[in-house]
Image 1 (cartoon, one colour):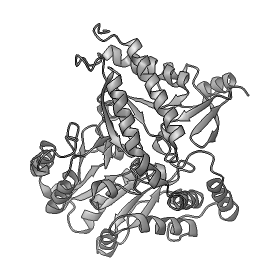
Image 2 (cartoon, one colour; image 1 turned 45 degrees about the vertical axis):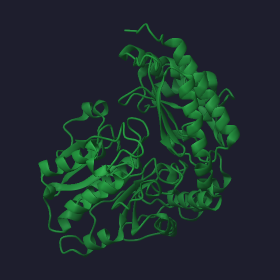
Image 3 (spheres, helix red, strand yellow; image 1 turned 135 degrees about the vertical axis):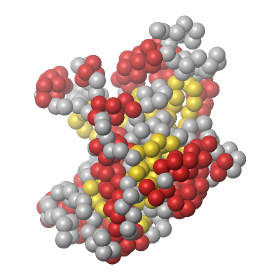
Image 4 (cartoon, helix red, strand yellow; image 1 turned 180 degrees about the vertical axis):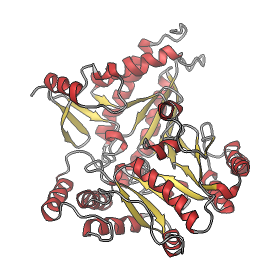
Length: 459
């Protein structure tokens, strides 16, 4: 069956995710094979996967060892649950994660996605406080433009108005605080930063005794790869400790090498109470997510007269095949020293993107670290003119999609708070692949400049 036939069947029978009708009506690619950092479509065209799938294919496509691990597990034990029983792949995956996670984050509760991981953290936080005799601690704090998932609890904690609006009312008791946009490096005493002061202000407004948890990403995806300023995370940790609030580090994107470390602690220097993960844990080869909790919290919940059980679970949570894939993936990542590749080449990517910023009037800012970056776009950085709403629509819905097809480099156009281009290559990308990626980005920026005049705003 050729690409046209497959697209026609997809339009009739397949429900697309976060896809506008005009995009679904276009000649979108249908991919049939993956090879390293590349995807191949029905026409045999080869695309560089500059987004690592959706920030997840960290070890690249087409790894025979990971596929073999899945095949062997299916042939041995295709399914068993973790409800009052266990199986070797889940035990081994949880043990391996405990070895790599910081501090006493030693207990992993497996689910199937990042959204489910956030749901799990919300529920655990509430039930933990309930078990400790503080049932009034139900409220959550999260940061402006943060994305924590699409299920109803995770969506409640998410701070993206456009994707929340169709589904209200959501969970009550979620407060929003500023993110770290505009704060980079040494910004003076972190305790005096407005983005820190706002956290304590909200806690005091709501009443510290009502707050269950604070959610934050080591590098925030929403609003474009925001790296926190020096001392920020230490202050957040201090505030949470002061008021008895659980600190949840959402690492669905950031963990398993995206920032050059297995977990965000390598960037933040702070041990959270809970880590949520998904994507890179299996490099996308099988669905898996999870919540890692401090051993002391789990002990306290299970040991309490009001606890004894975490009242949460999922049929597929810790599935044998998914956890076997995770073990193979994480072991290969560790044994092949893939994180060293990120540490070595990440600064080179940043320097190259900074050079593209200097060379293109349409680039407003470049943010990120490791193998995770955002290029924020504008009309003209010489005059300081931002894109109009009409120009932003043209860039995101027409220019960039056509550029991806023309350059055969897949990235992501993002409209969450600004017009941005997200960059997140597989962690195994070498200099040749990264050179091709950067050449494609250069061409995309040129396409934007051809479409958007510097001094004649499109209304």
